[in-house]
Length: 151
Picture 1 (cartoon, rainbow, N blue to C red):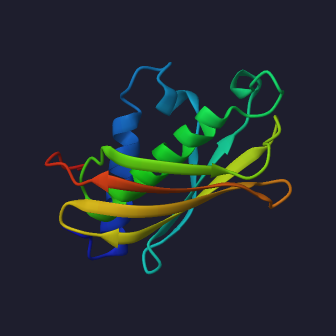
Picture 2 (cartoon, rainbow, N blue to C red):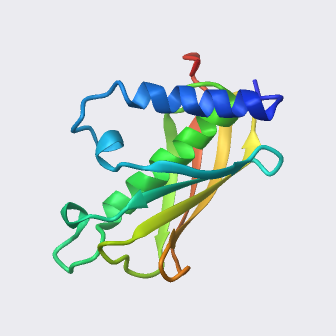
């Protein structure tokens, strides 16, 4: 069930964010402190931003790749929920890392729903270092339209 209006998309997105706010405070979804930056109903795009903090760093002093993957999973999952209306368990997630991400910056995750079908939502995304504009990683994923509605 794809959405039909921008207002419906935004309501579903905000409904999903409200659900995430009910999770334990130390859950990864809350700990990453992300926020909605922009969206386009027509283009089926959503951009979330994530601050980088000391606890996210690997022994090399840059953001851990597993956390960047988690940022993609959260961003594409929230976007899939917004465009489909259903809680979207991840079916596949593929990530390519292109450059290191420093501490004390922001990562912008730009997501695009390439296909919103009856059973699955296909997503593509790019992670961009806000200070430099450099693409640090790319991802694609498939999300399942479960029977659990977002709102």
